[in-house]
Length: 263
Image (tube, rainbow, N blue to C red; front, side):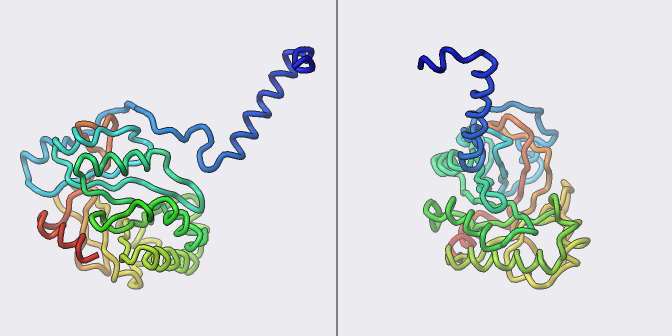
């Protein structure tokens, strides 16, 4: 203590910066940004309340740390019946709102699912194990299948398509073996058509299709249909304080429950 007392203010500040940097490096994933918190952002232009007035259906949301703490009970009262929460990304990242979202979705009676944001240049097996560590022990038979989110990201254009496909296959196979469930693929028309060249190697997996057309999705080859349709990135849902993605299940609640049981 005496030695620290005699140090100059500049030296103390320097030591403090070094200590902060060391903690940041040693803590896994997000360092100090690990606690999920309330956020407030701009509202979306597509209100779930208004959409339900125009068209009945089984609607849901997908969220990540960006939405902060969600009031899932209010969201369900508004009409949210299912939701996907981001769990992991790449080799080691865990979304710091995932655990809270996962528990609160169940408490609110929202059918829940978890997704992994895929990095095509990284080992599919390593990424799969990151997802498995975060999700498997908490996943139940009443939850949606695991999801891998494949889309344009940093480094994709520099990654050979054959490498991307190999890594994606590794992720899907590893996760399916761990969960004993066939995972679902989330993607969009532009990425799958332009980069994946409408690959037919994955059409045996359920599809969650992103197609931002409020009226009807643009179907994606080689799939002949889809299970979920993400129709807007500009949604507004009571209980979620930011703009949010909204989705529609392609079927009835009865068929959705059957989908869960089949998996």
